[in-house]
Length: 111
Image (cartoon, rainbow, N blue to C red):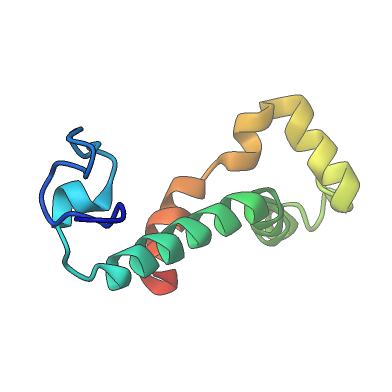
């Protein structure tokens, strides 16, 4: 096409093949806006759950440990103390425990 317009084949106007990572390579000229929105929503939902994962884990620990330790004193006493205790005992993996399940659960809802 004159003027550098887009071609509907897998070869660009300069004769070079279209890269594999291009949506034009996989879908041609089809409108895939819905797919882009679906993927963007899924990724954003997964990222938001991962960012909030340490707080979700802490919430669960408060709910479960409080019931277990009513007579013996609280094991987890506050927000910063609990986050520090998780870091000392389990490291970064302790903050992410259960995150995979949350991500799998939230992606269909946020997409």
